Image 1 (cartoon, rainbow, N blue to C red):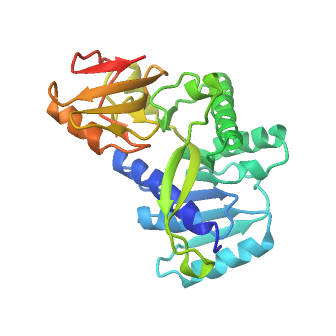
Image 2 (image 1 turned 45 degrees about the horizontal axis):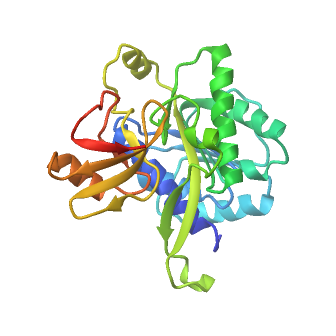
Length: 296
């Protein structure tokens, strides 16, 4: 609890805040937490949304489950129904929000990971969030889940799309290049009694799937839906006096370096200047502008 709950809390806060900002109508009533640990995912969810009344936490460690229960009882925010289990239940109940944070890497092999992903996907009513360490191995596990859900969905024909971080549904360009992982960066201050007094960095990889029939239908028709295709900043931007160089993942599944020049378009330059690693830029697929230049 002392060493991992804080970085996990800040990572999940970043992810949940984006869901809340882009999907204002989403206010989950039910939540399923695979690899729940001490319950840090629930803490973030309770701070983000106000309507959660049922929580199911799954962790193989009884000690973790007991500690999680004790912490929840101390919380001023109360949930009507809280359940903890050691293993995945066999019921077909669906949940508005399902999260697996830093848990898949603990499973012994690919087969068990894919079995768990299949079960979690069947239980997902709205959002499925998967988070791992931002290492090469963590990123490969995230991409494994990404490709597997894309594959199994061909058979069940369920409407969904990748909500974040990818602005596209093509193969991940980072994975194709096989050079560096697609990861993001958070800064946090550890608990003071843990012996650290300075900010630390947490690299993480993640993916968010969203099931939504109506929005997918509109997207097929070519209408704007929550600006889901905006480009994502995938590394730190380089800021100069009159231009900003951004490393972006685009809506057609490519990695590009784009330079935004102040003299051509001040508003877009200001956006780029204030955008950090992991943020999105208001650029859509038809972006062919002469307002900026592209570095090959």
